[in-house]
Image (cartoon, rainbow, N blue to C red; front, top):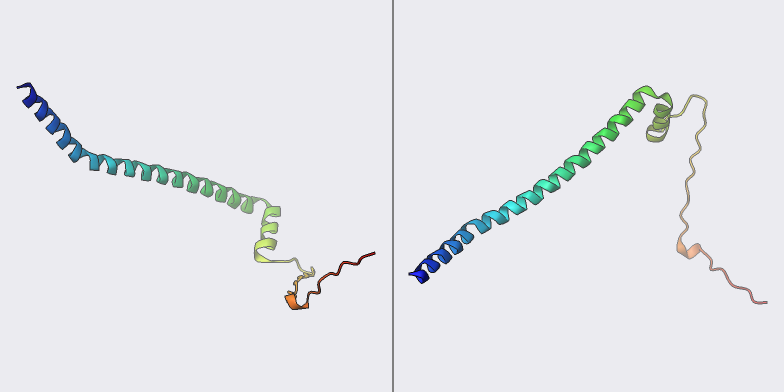
Length: 103
């Protein structure tokens, strides 16, 4: 009788494990995904906060507005002259090797 009871107890444990193990595995994957999404939400909220600060500065601070207009839009004040330096690429064949001189 004791063996029969032990057998049934073991059978119930094995069946319960087979039933709940896939669900538990799925639960752990979903918790990991939830954690990843929470980190992404926090990152995006931080980014939104930075953008709102920048928006406020652009609306209230003329120096920031002027700097942004010059850098991003390339605007200049009337009467200013803009010089654009363009570097020319030299093909490798035209570059002469430097010779070491011996004394």
